[in-house]
Image (cartoon, rainbow over all chains, first blue to last red; front, side, top):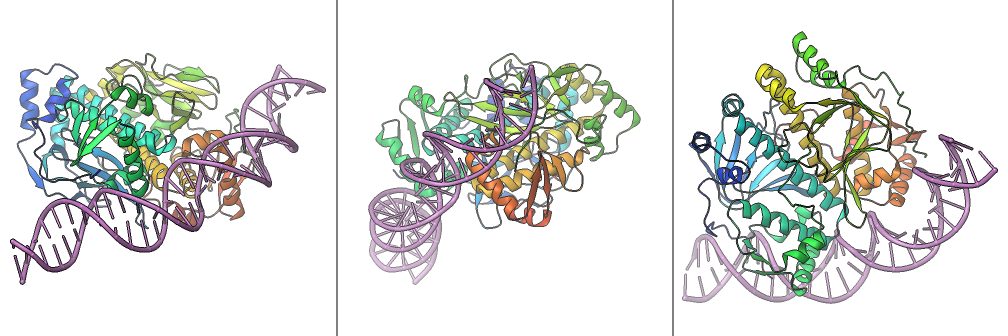
Length: 252
Length: 252
DNA sequence: CGTTAGTTTGACGCGATTCAACCTTCGTGG
DNA sequence: CCACGAAGGTTGAATCGCGTCAAACTAACG
């Protein structure tokens, strides 16, 4: 029953370039395009677990691709209540679209040690000019992010605690699978019960009890932070996931 | 106390082109750019109040700009629970980003008679090639949509019923103000209590009671579907809105 | 003038929170 | 190598915000 938010990032075969892997699942990338994407990773910034590397209200110009690690995008209310907007996984962008206003509206916190690839805004423009196929892939990334967030809203607004947890597990599982970070229905969960509660709009106590119920029902097992989804079909039934889940996003 | 989801759309001076108005608030548009944006409105489709004009799971290729009216983007769970993802107001896009997958993941329902401007995907590409300034404005639109949805998630996850309602009123007020559809802290609310409940993840009964409490506290008044925010400062205090609200979005 | 959609109201119940312990694990420094 | 503190997990009891049910009311429309 223990969730272990271990900071050592050694789970599985970490993708060389999760972004390339993610986009390849969608479209065929030419060698030139792959080179360009790898070139985006020339710069590198490392962030220790526990650090906020984007802070609400502060200057935020350059954007990033997360190369490895887990991070959380969140907002804090004045009285300390926290809502997590989403989980950022390897290959995800932080600030993909041009922000010509100046400040961040959310904070981003590293839950494990993270490697970032800072991207100059000019590089994004370059994509639109020189790589039309990549440009539409980025558009897909945008739509996908929006869709994930929309599903998050549905989860928060109209699902029970039990359903929320199942739905989140499935989201993480599918997203990790796409970048080669989960296999055989197993993945490492790098966030605490407190994080889960702020993600799902519940209390830690209730998260704990619900997690217990999930394992008691034989749907999920957990040891040392590793989650195992024991019956995907029933889980998808419970979560009432759209068909197909996280693969086929269209509307923004 | 009556919310009147009147379908006659005659509130105030409807903007000729709400999109132009919205973008003008952000950047200076050249005559050429304004012409181009107006040109997007050549095609026109009308939809009656109550109609779903985008349906989850169905083909969805062309995108739209909403010229006039109110629409709701929502998702339905199998057992009938509904969560509204967001309110679509004049000048808003539906499906701005290129969707090279085929189907819609959400439904969109017109709450008033709506006028739509269908946009061929090619037009969006044209913007990126010929109008770099417009292209970044569209990027801003995307970021803004994401930020509104993120605030929606915070609302659903970590605010009380009372706060949710206040926060929503402020969101609508500010968005309508930007396109000239609200004045003197008043605007017409074109959705029912049922819609409010599915928007805020509450029951209609509780929405009603909370609305009653808001008016009793002298913060808001309502007659025939017209909302009046009587004390913006206190409302913003209650909603704990970020500074500045809905104007300065940066992170995606 | 009946029908339909939406609003209003009260009584009751439950899902989730709060509070307050206590326990376990792990990293750190003496 | 053990002592200690911090962070996170576990548990029960009491409480409350919000949901459910059910019925009456009101306005709009043909």
